[in-house]
Length: 232
Image 1 (cartoon, rainbow, N blue to C red):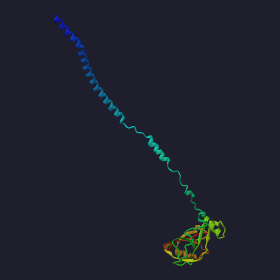
Image 2 (image 1 turned 180 degrees about the vertical axis):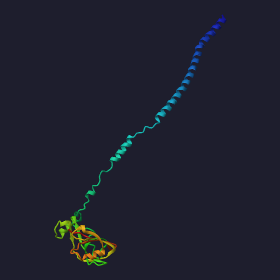
Image 3 (image 1 turned 90 degrees about the vertical axis):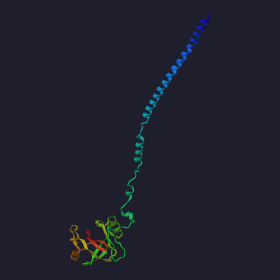
Image 4 (image 1 turned 90 degrees about the horizontal axis):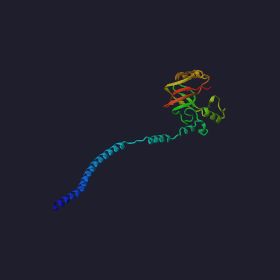
């Protein structure tokens, strides 16, 4: 009786302990599986993170803003041009009613010799080394109209030029050694003009009934060119 009771008690104890042992083993098995799953999940997350970084690391450049800026710079340029130049006038109205002669003018001051420049007048008393010169004013265009009106002459003047010679004082001019002369063989025909030297001009001057006016160009105090002026 005592033996049976002991055996039965042991079996009962073992039977009672068996579920606890199985539960412990199951828990241990589950813990190992979770650790393994955790390791795998971590690796995948790492791989996923790497893939995401590779995808998002590429820049997404835009060109719309730069193109808009260039267009704005182009359209911002000023459009006002050349209006000032159109207001510049070359007429005599800008000269307060004072006509301006051609060349270097006709008022160099009260001096015995003419300064360098281009001067209009009448040559006389021609010598081998000098000639006398009566300075005058030659006007053309609008200036001729104004000058003729001021002088009480026909205005507009015939042939679009007007000569004013208020002062008949003469100056002595010295020709340069290489001076050239544009000589009118026939003063009434501009096509008769020819280039001659100074001695020839002096020699033929006394043979003509009419002596045209001349332009003289002076450089360094000497006459370098003489040109007879055709007057229709």
